[in-house]
Figure 1 (tube, rainbow, N blue to C red):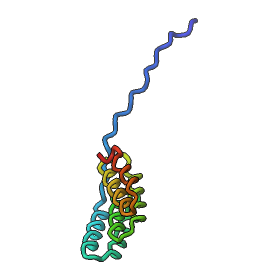
Figure 2 (figure 1 turned 135 degrees about the vertical axis):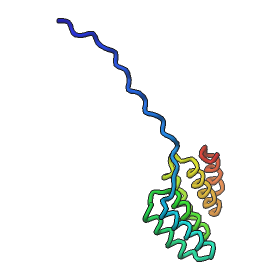
Figure 3 (figure 1 turned 90 degrees about the horizontal axis):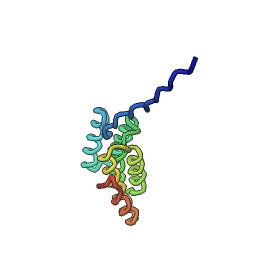
Figure 4 (figure 1 turned 45 degrees about the vertical axis):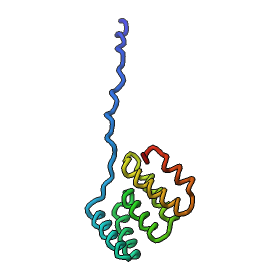
Length: 130
């Protein structure tokens, strides 16, 4: 008995394209971020920092919280820590162009505060900054 004729195999269908990712804050974290902004506006940087630390414990992988913390570090005149926050946020924001842009702006500001203008200029020219 001859073998059955071979049936050509079709490749599996391609998975559907994923929509761009958008980061959001949970209601609890949003409340803490709002509180931290209020504290910062009143000049209480220590309390704002403590509040953002609490937000990070709730959502440690949310780049939006890292951006808030980086902005606070810039306000505290600590551009090295702000740079670290910006880099962390950028790494966590993959796929979310709006958040990547926010993290990029934080990073540019932190680098400029350190007089690292060439590096800041390179960040500004990355595709997610447009």
